[in-house]
Length: 232
Image (cartoon, rainbow, N blue to C red; front, side, top):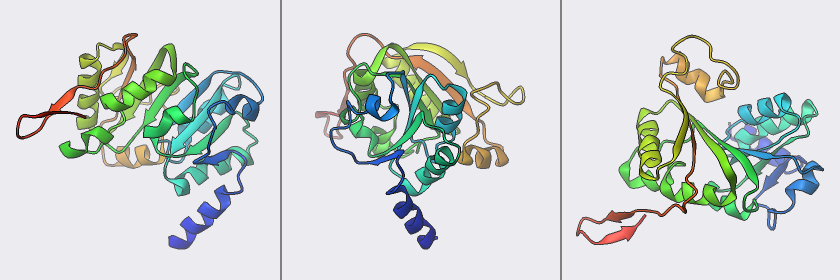
């Protein structure tokens, strides 16, 4: 397994569609894609199933999969190269730094596909739908753009609904069981590697699509045990 990971890490160093911790990248996407088409992000993209499938389905849009796991990213990046899919790229970096890589009001949509739910309450700030992340997304999303979450984690889904309600976001669509009526329509029928495993375990897949408010998101304070407030 270690040898396989080392091979993949070495390979993506040579891939033209993979950017690893690039500097001054925010204004370089148009030259890379050679157009000014709308950009859609897949966060926690894993093997990039959504990014590649979207790119093939929507040639007039550009897609960027973002993740920290380079060995997983290799799969989607290589698939795109092998199939000459030129409107998709992969960005290896920490998602909390997302505003360093994209210009304000430049992203048309965000998909968050089966992210780590960080179930411990002490890790809540790392959830990709936490206020601190929503605040960053708000900086790069175009007005009226949507955020989509697809997950097998009910705690994460419920937490996201709480965030949506707290920040008065607009819910566009909510499905509490994506497969309740059988195979869903595109794009929810796109299955990630981990989604396939979850379905084999009979887990319920949930989905929600929402828009952030026009008012600037404020990160709520969290009370410490000694009742002193601190910003999370």
